[in-house]
Image 1 (cartoon, rainbow, N blue to C red):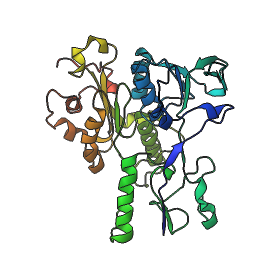
Image 2: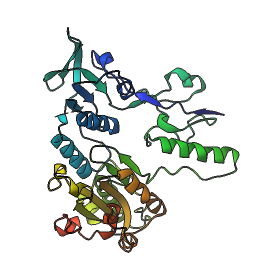
Image 3: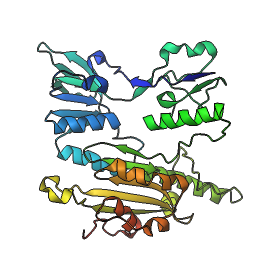
Image 4: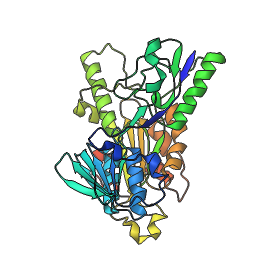
Length: 365
């Protein structure tokens, strides 16, 4: 048996001059400030690096091909983008580099697909990762890898060749997170050598994005929930004899938004974390903390998604990870006594729903 666990590497830019762009790995090994920096991408790495470079005083521009943090909750991502822009990070939306050319004074002139140009001290590529599988000659034993990114399609970490397994960032369509790879490896070893049968559960994995306003998420985004539960309702309406699939929603291509929204209740709140209230520079009247809980109205108000913007997002979100994995409903959450004054307790005091049309702004301390 063989296990592929080579991880991934930052995907290089494909435009002319793309070889002049550094990666996030290179950024942390520079011997001087990157200066005026252009970051290409809109995922974790692009926004996290863009945020701290701006905070360090670097003139930073992020080129975004489509949307920020694809796959995450749009409302939360839009709030992150607005906060970063207010703090000085510049965004070029709907454009990517079409050419990067060195200048005589050691800088780089970047031409974008929207026709604009600018000159930067540093250009950084953060437009995804490619599995580090090209040098393994996997095709010799019949393992099929994506021609686009070298990733492997697996079922329970098993490739199309039964004796070849894979874990981590080489897997297609699964979270590229170190703890996910570690857990998958542990569970695979238990199945192969310890007599266990339990497979890795890739659903409801808590994660955090360490942008200037931190973001924590577990479960479905509001858009995914609307899509999944809308299609589920449509299937049940068309075929009432079929089993209800609400608790294990699929993610179809087409959306029935009306049915989806009708099947969901979204509780939300805008709040000011205690530590932020001491700093006028936080502009909390405009950029507050935020959280939302997405519930399935057709299944006892089961919680299918939790989202949080505020300080210590990783700590807050991790705390709800076990509950999401085991399954709980909104009543369980609202009957939990919070710890005051913490930001995590906001989840236990939610009362305002989006469907009510009432303001999400929290009052009091």
